[in-house]
Length: 408
Image 1 (tube, rainbow, N blue to C red):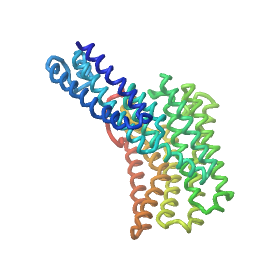
Image 2 (image 1 turned 90 degrees about the vertical axis):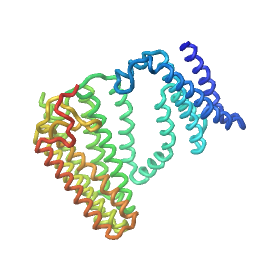
Image 3 (image 1 turned 60 degrees about the horizontal axis):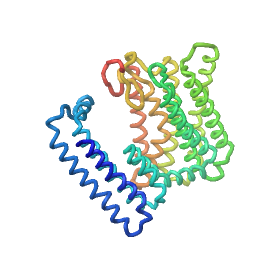
Image 4 (image 1 turned 135 degrees about the horizontal axis):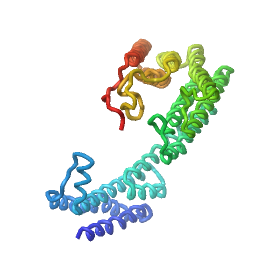
């Protein structure tokens, strides 16, 4: 019986997906198709799902409390069939929503067909593909604006983002680790970080008067960002591909020299924030006062705190203080959750380049009184946060403790 129910669900769903893909070219039939695929069939599958769950739940073991419980639950063929109907109903409903939203957004119907296929086969992947299509025009507009503001840095930042794609594939295919972390994690992090730094610098240069964008000091800033970025990313990626450390590597004279050069390169890269801050202070008269002040303070703090934390990490011989070997780390960031970590103030310092100018822009747009005072207050609070994370790190305390157990 369950095999027949499984086949019946598939027999209903497959033609519905085909009709959904063809609907834009079927004229007056389109509203009827959307009603069928978005309401009638999902409701029918939902009722079948409810009946299966109500009938066989008590006979099946397990539940939703843990992965093993879910595994036990779906060992029963009735609950497994219910899960299939759940999948078919929700995916078809989402597919119909994609069709409606795609038409409303003016997306070519042919571009939606791959989204339908991905939604049917892989559920959320199809939804992500559609959302990517939705934001693509805004991304293109942003890319053109960055290119208009500073083309060299726009291209450089974009190429680094593009380089992350094969690196992500390599990370997926390559199981090697270094100190318990995938060998491609560090190259990916640095590609993202340097790309963001370059693109932010491109945007900020575009806020300067036109004659200053091509001035000698601006050209030097662009050249240093690109040269140091290429060197840093190139060496870190090479070392990652070889499953060797790029930082604190003293295995040979070559590695010692390269690590020293990386330190110089990182310092030069972050130092480009200072002449850019000087350009804004000297030539930013046409900008809103709170925004101009926030850019200057953000760039200065980027160098002082970002480079300062980097130097502290180098002098300490590592980023962690008092951390348990192999202990838990914070998801995404990789910061230690069992001890102090100097990467936290380093992260906050580096991203003052984005956060404070953004806050200054919002303050300027709001037309609030005492805008400059608000920028000074916000900068003081942000600097205090950086100092606090420094004190946490040197005290051997994690930003967010997650226990002292070694990572599995």
